[in-house]
Image (tube, rainbow, N blue to C red; front, side, top):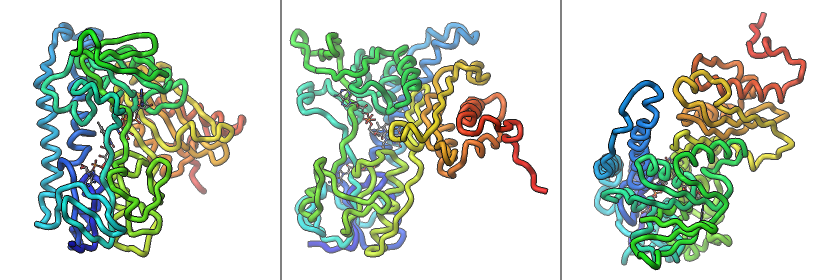
Amino acid sequence: MRKVKYAIIGAGTSGLTALSYLKKRNEDFVMIQGGPYGTTCARVGCMPSKALIHTANHYHQRHHMAEIGIENAEQQEVDLVKVMQRVRALRDRFTGGVKSGSTDTLAPGQLIEGYAEFVAPNQLKVNDEVIEAERIIIANGSRPVVPTPWKELGDKLMTSDEIFELETLPKRIAVIGLGVIGLELGQALARLGIEVVGVEMLNTLGGLSVPEVVEEAVAEFSKEFPVHLGVAANLRLNPDNPEEVEVQIGEEKVYVDAVFASLGRRPNIDNLNLAAAGVELDGRGMPNFNLHTSQIEDKPIFIAGDVNGYRQILHEAGDEGRMAVLNAVSYPQISAYARKTSLGVAFTDPQIGLVGQRYTELDADKIEVVTFKLNCANGRAIVIGQDKGAISLFADKESKQLLGAELFLFEGEHMAHLLAWMIEQKLTVMDLLRMPFYHPVLEEALQSALRELAHKLYPQDTDWMEAELSALEG
Ligand SMILES: Cc1cc2nc3c(=O)[nH]c(=O)nc-3n(C[C@H](O)[C@H](O)[C@H](O)COP(=O)(O)OP(=O)(O)OC[C@H]3O[C@@H](n4cnc5c(N)ncnc54)[C@H](O)[C@@H]3O)c2cc1C
Ligand SMILES: NC(=O)c1ccc[n+]([C@@H]2O[C@H](COP(=O)([O-])OP(=O)(O)OC[C@H]3O[C@@H](n4cnc5c(N)ncnc54)[C@H](O)[C@@H]3O)[C@@H](O)[C@H]2O)c1
């Protein structure tokens, strides 16, 4: 048995963040990594998906060139083999960068290849070796949800783990699950000329919840591929042609060459035999951990990144890795850290932005809500042909602070950040109206939404001219 002070399970974004801290301090640690190196984000997640989306969006522009006076753009062609080669070349560049700055730099013995599982409270088994670690950071990520019966579809069923490996793309794909991954990749595939059909069991998509924003988003995506909401698809190989998959959507049957499953990601917690660590698991198999410390119960075990099932996005994985390692080092002294304002962006076109508290989680009696549609007089949106989508804002009636926002907006990633930073600063709607807004920019639509919200929040007799200016003292 080998004894170390720290063990990190998983060399993803979260685990590598923790690793960088221990390495800098010359601590006694092991990093245990099962599966390919380079992180989910760089290897099969954020980066290859954004590379595919980039080409898809450029190619899609050919449909809008004639309206701005550029002729013959419709004749452009896409070489799908080259597209996929570029996706993989960029993927290799990103994973190479990750590895060379992290796992490749470890001394012999600091890196163990294999899947760890607990065999006792402080003991992990990897292959045939048992590691005893005083403090353990669990950062072993998540994996795509795939219902067992669907596995019968063999290689006609894909997830984000497989799609970027394809030499070229199938002609017809059913995308099941229109959350973030399904929408980003479904739209990109449709834009690359693939016949896409989208199915989502909820009556919304992309995590949106404000009815007017959902309506705008459904209308826009439906222009590019059929979107079926509120229905779960049944899948089987076509009995008359096993080269095809039969997708039953309610009464309708659709035949496709492949299915892309984007049903969510399941924490890899079930692989760890946490019961052997004396950790109690809830009905979903999850341990009781503190979101502000990353600690599991009061044990020297910390959990960070996708595996905790909280906010499965990259910057949160990084923050949780930081929190986990700081507390692992200071254990038994534990510090609680504030969680940052929630921020999510789907890189669709228009983009979806979910910021701060969710509309559905708020008490409707305590908030004011406005939804400003981009087809209502925003000069910049009209000039660039992006007068579609909506900005929805929610503020607290009493404090007048902005609490959250939902965006469906061209390049909304930037406004989503501005809004998250505003909420993080606890600014009121009037504080925000005192900020400068340039002309002509999309942010003027935010200004219009804020003005509408202010009219709901502040007394009827407010002098708006005066209110938007800051009075000088003395
Ligand atoms: C298609 C796609 C697109 C995405 N796009 C975005 C985006 O645009 N923006 C964003 O913020 N987020 C995005 N994400 C989410 C983001 O990639 C994840 O939130 C993030 O990578 C999670 O990092 P992690 O460190 O928790 O896990 P990972 O990076 O998955 O690392 C966990 C590692 O642990 C290993 N492992 C598993 N079990 C064991 C074990 N028992 N022992 C040892 N090692 C083990 C795994 O093989 C893996 O290498 C996307 C995800 C996907 C799939
Ligand atoms: N841009 C980004 O930040 C980004 C991009 C991709 C992924 N991610 C992360 O990856 C995680 C996983 O993404 P995801 O899109 O797989 O999950 P998700 O939870 O966003 O969406 C999954 C969707 O599938 C639906 N669904 C589940 N089972 C279904 C069924 N049988 N039939 C039809 N619909 C079904 C769900 O209702 C849900 O809307 C996300 O939570 C996100 O945090 C982030």
